[in-house]
Length: 206
Image 1: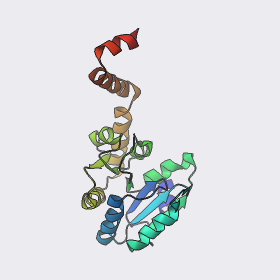
Image 2: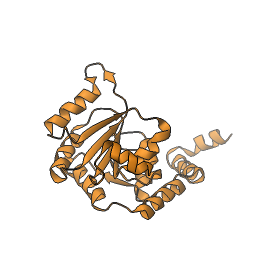
Image 3: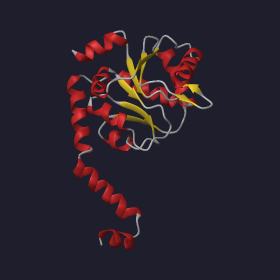
Image 4: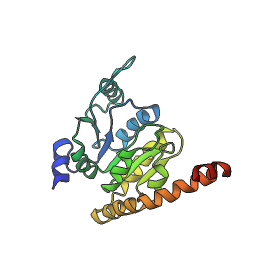
């Protein structure tokens, strides 16, 4: 029920609904991908969650997004939810058909993990730290490079095969298992052994 209420509040119940967290600017691949996606699915909506912020030289990021949306003739399709209480964000992740990380590069992206734990797939570039973890469990579509057509195709691939409740639950369970403390610790230990000289291992152990 919370999922249905969240969708009704912001999006048409039967229209595809994508979610984006944060109010940063859209890079070119996402800008053009939005234009392409709008042409393919005119009823789709993109809900931006997160408060506005002002940056020197750029001004209001929300206004930047609104201008880009207008350039794409998608101003009615991009909606702004504003700040969402942290405890309520899982409802927004669960209500969306997909989550989009539009940054070209991020160290990790906890938002993508939170979306996966809610059973929602994320479309992202191959420069997002959490990408390989989530791709392995079917919780992300990783787009190689910056081609806008590829980014739009990634979004389309998710919308074309939306999971039912059982598959979404399975995605959440696989994500929780893949990112369990024990498994992440072993993976990080493997990276340490691979990239740090043996002498440094001995020093760290001492």
